[in-house]
Length: 287
Image (cartoon, rainbow, N blue to C red):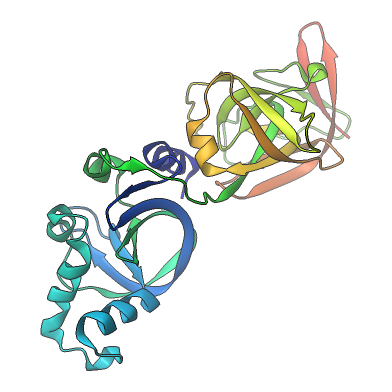
């Protein structure tokens, strides 16, 4: 999933939501399973259930332990029995019968209904968020994500990056006060201006949110002057606000690098850099 989608999901769910025998959280999941297509949205949008959970549900409801022996006319009843726990809106939204489907391992919003995990695959947040807006917050384990701390970035006008020769440099946009431990928190776009501090009570770092930045879209991935990276929970990323101090796992790569982020979890590095301060701004020099 794109970082912008994950952030939207995280803001809607927070650290978790629950109501009676239902729970909504964000988890990493994938593998073989069954897929119920949304009846009013594009192909590939719907509900996915892991094969192990589907087998468990069939066995509990019917006593049949071998899926091939489940009569076809039982399947719509089985589907309705699973989904109606959360409300008729889900029963009425998806097809009565599923098809076999292998879900790519990734992070998704997961509805757990009476112990059965139901993954909301590509389902727009504004379609399901009103249905759970009255649920109570709960604490669940949020997946960790790795984000970059950068000194600044260079927008690009073409798919292939415009790289300088070794020894030459590039002017950075949105420069930061790196001498005072300031950086831009980056995840496919600038998220916040932050300042890194030592935690006096542990060996960890604390990331103080100085300013949450407005969303910017880039046609092509910008070049980044990466200082380091941090690992923190997706829930903390989605709910961070100005003034927050968030404990993070700080990763110092030993060298500053010129790179770009091609998607939510992959980076492409182009070499090491040194940063030069001038009266007109900050320069990333390729070394």
